[in-house]
Length: 362
Image (tube, rainbow, N blue to C red; front, side, top):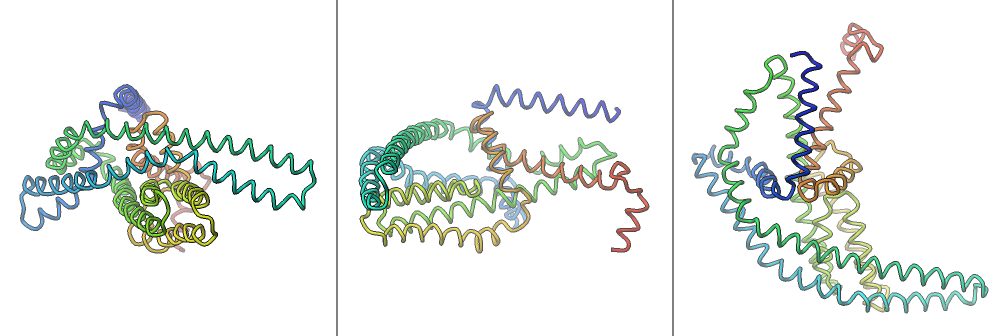
């Protein structure tokens, strides 16, 4: 098979994959989730095997422990999160009114410095902005309610996901060995090297970032709760969970938290405490959590992660979100490999002996 034929074959296979993903997205959700969980748990299963457990025993222990902890966590958090979301949606008009009153007070202070025309323009602009803010928060509340329904739908598939996880985790090494045996012999070593790069990228992001998000969510939730912020735990915990989207999660949490704080408190000090909690969380993430738990192995730029998550969710829904980062990791590794090959080729403009002489001198 020529190179052109191989390219057409892989291109057609990828197009068929995208078509099936688009058509069967809802059906594939528990299978993709089970595959992701099996990938995350495989190192723990391998560790138990090295300690003397058989693969089936290690799989039973790891799978049962993971889903037992996940069930306990859901039973503890879902009622609290649902209640706070409902209360937050009900209090949105009150928060909007409080923010409007505080803004009117600020405008009153500016009356002595502004003329009638400028003041009228400012009031008109504020009225328009406040209306947009109300619409935004009402839409946000509706989106949260829709998200809760989606989570409940996903929970109805909870029986399928553990089964898929169990069988994939049990047969993970056999599956990897079987796929390895399908690799073209002439390029097997190169492909294995790139797969190892992809695995390093995914393990660095998935396992490390998941831990970072949970720790950040706990920090923000407990901190805002102790600060006395209404719905502080839910705002902080959800801020941590969506922190896998770089910058976006913290900015959303900061805007929502400060808006609630301004509407709730009548003094500057509590608002400053809320802002300080988010600032401390950013310092903790940037200087301690991410360097220690994720490190420099990821190799995925923040902009590409945001683009991948938004594009995957828009095209393929929840399954697209699950597959966005793995696909972006694969694309990133292949792009770096292709760029390296290009820089070593005559197309770049340097002869092969020039590259070898340069590398020898360096």
